Length: 285
Image 1 (cartoon, rainbow, N blue to C red):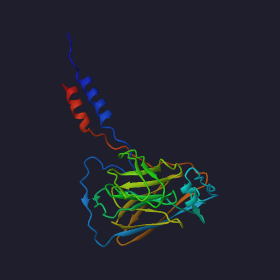
Image 2 (cartoon, rainbow, N blue to C red):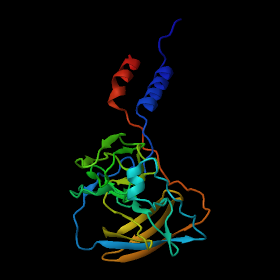
Image 3 (cartoon, rainbow, N blue to C red):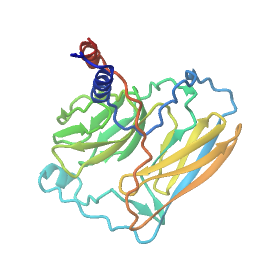
């Protein structure tokens, strides 16, 4: 007796299509648990707290390298003493570490700030090297150099784009729709140029200063995971409880010779995308 498509075959087919078409890439923030209550728009109460801290560095830091910009005479003339910026240590403190709330804010939603953080191209280097924005927040890219630049973010979870910016041109305004920590930015004209953008679903982030210090203000009272991310040494996580109007201090410490430690990225649940709905309907017939 001939049997048509068995229920088992149909189930396997649908599962395969769901995995293939609905695949999601990793993001730097934990997804909401299934069945969790919808996020509530946060309204400040006056009880918000603050997290302050410092990023330490132990051991002998790697020597900063001289950047050869002779391929572009304009760059070489404007920035003749340029040094590498992947590791900058001052008196045992590590600069350019992205520090942000990794978990603890899932029950809240936050309005996207109207402020437009600026990424400048000055001396054929990105300024700042590390910055943060909210998903959907505009990022303004400007150029202070009399030479051509090419801004090329290479995200995993957001649309990739590549835009030319000649000298004296208008600012480029772009945003990233999905959270992602971190998005590398390069310039196709000048291979030594690098920047990193952290995209979050909330506004609570900071970048360690020259003295390694950072500050995250306006936090609702609660328990948090705070992650520190560095482009060469990777991620570290600290847990902290912030009370009403309380200021808590935390420290992170990186070490010379330490291997890169990726952040604890988590897979988002598989979603069925519009591209797949028709295909799955055909498979179910």
